[in-house]
Amino acid sequence: EVQLVESGGGLVQAGGSLRLSCVASGFTFSRYAMSWLRQAPGKGLEWVSDILMSGERTSYAESAKGRFTISRDNAKNTLYLQMNSLKADDTAMYYCAKGLRGTGERGQGTQVTVSS
Image 1: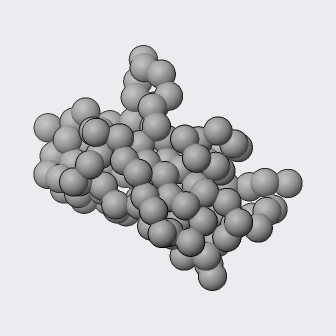
Image 2: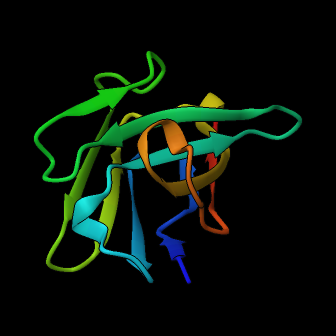
């Protein structure tokens, strides 16, 4: 059974930083691209970033470019999202997901709230 458990969310002031983590189990983590998605209150699911199996290539939504960094540690089965220069518009539930563009299973999410 695929399990993805996110953590690291919280309340932060605008301009601050957070580092999200996602621990994966139930599949061979190193064989899959992974993604981060988010859903703001009252809005649809938005793709944020993804990373290939060995971390050799990453992609970002325009809203995340230059501020967010996706990474992974295959030895720890863990995906990360470093978020800097946070804005109020970044307030959302953040999910990690298996596969590119979040096409596979996703976790329960971790809430990020940015106060302006």
